[in-house]
Amino acid sequence: MKPASEKVKQWIDNGRDPRSAHWQAGLEALLEVFEPYLEPGRLVPAVSLDASDRQVFDEALAVIDVSPNVAAVFLPPEAAGKIRPPESAPELERIEKSRPAYKILLQRPGAQPRLACLDISPQAHNPGVDLFQDGALLGTYDFEDRKECMDSLDQILFAHMWEKGKWEASDFRRYTVNWFERVMDTGKGDIAVKTDFSYLHTPSLIKSNPVDVIFTLIVDVFDRRLQETHGPIRQALGEIFALPDQQARQTRYYEMAEKIVLQFLSLIKDTELVDFTEFSEKQTDNFKKATSAAIPRIAQKMEAAGPA
Picture 1: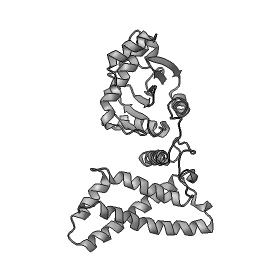
Picture 2: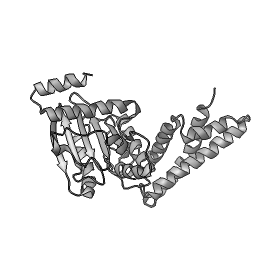
Picture 3: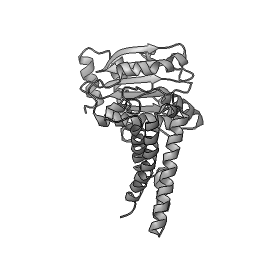
Picture 4: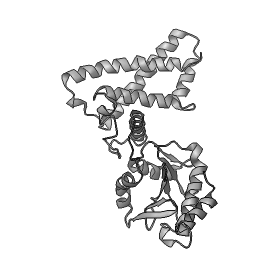
């Protein structure tokens, strides 16, 4: 990757406005700082959030729908307050310096990476979106009303920051899991989602059916959570691994797996992601069988994750 100063010089030599060239380079440099902590396809907070920051982050989670390879970081005032556009570009200033700023940065990869800077601060006088590419300000979206801004973000990001190339099955799986984890984090089923890209909504994306995809999703999310070294699943399993009796461990694996499956199903029902009342008699029968099969499957994954 070229040093920021070299990129800026090249952009300016190519006729870009020095103000937008320097601002984009600065935002890209900030993204590089947080890159080790980011996971493409997910909106990640730059630092730990307090209660007021968490409220704004949850609002963002509900509307920021990210395609699988796009990096996205949420900057609360602690981080966002330290970055300001050039004083010579007042049109890029969306909130007064004395007020708490909340920004989101997204970067779409490719031969010509594109960057979006969102200001969603509750106290912003001009909330909105700035889009950059190759040192140029491609466009801006300005809103006088923050609610209108938040309601418009999904459409704006889909138009400008989504990957347009062909998706593989793995992309659909990651997108669906990322979306469902947003449902888990917010407890809401009406958050932004592209149903044509979610295998829960469109089972044919992974050559499945409306019943089996429910359990595919449960297992996919469990597998991701199982990889979290310090997550709650690993912590609970640590206590089970410590049990000296193998039969006792297997009983606990099954009990824990049953609890996890039922919790997932309850969330899916409570958030109205699936209307189980619309299942045919055959689908209902298959659903019961799939539920029974998912529990030992997850229990076996728990056992396999233990000490050799």
